Image 1 (cartoon, one colour):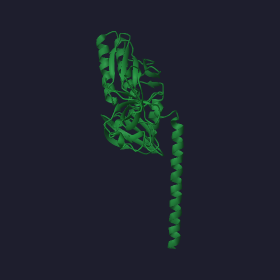
Image 2 (spheres, one colour):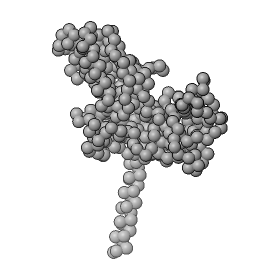
Image 3 (spheres, rainbow, N blue to C red):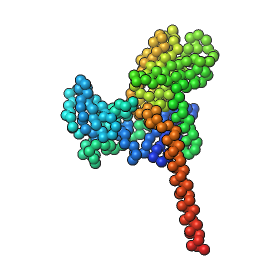
Image 4 (cartoon, rainbow, N blue to C red):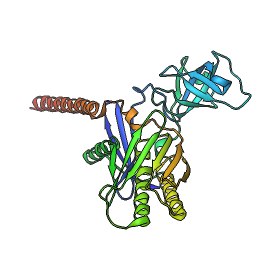
Length: 313
């Protein structure tokens, strides 16, 4: 997929946004610079220590030296002992107080310089997976567009083109997405429901990607009695998910009542957690610090220029 990459950098933080050919944002990334960020990130390799086995020995808890212990799922028959050193790759970042999901990495633990911790960052950029960047933008315009995309991603309700909206609610168990007609007008009967559901499916897929949602989700479409209408909307939804997401979601059919279940493999932490609850306030503090540094730099440059002019006189 072709997209434009927007980048905004401040002291200790980088924000990135991908927008599609229509200018709609669909993927956000907010990161502390690696030197300041001690949390396990998608694709990184870490040195860890086996802490204990999962119930039923379905896997192992692994301490990484930062944050909650990760969960390492292994093939049947694989065995570790408590305290054993392992090298693991992050296949899903921590979320909702739960540790990251891990997989064994083919890097010797001796490569780590310390006891536990990051050995190396990801060799590829998971954020750009499946994306062909046609243009990169920075500066004030990029910052404003990223601010607007973050504001959009934090809203509960997202309006649909032509009327109607979708509402997104996250709970401990799953994410619920409700498609509502609102004041939408146009087609009548079953055609009305199908058109609204197609618009809602595209918007839901983009918001799932924009917010980096993962795990179980249920989409409540308008009921469509006709099986071929349900099939058409389902195919439209699957194509939209494949277009925007870095990973393939497992999508079940749409029931007669309009409910569609899907499972989205977890990867990057949800945007709400990546922001750490600080939101734009922390960003403004970083901007103030950046502006202050620039002001001091200009003052220092002017003072040096003046001294050189005086010496020349």
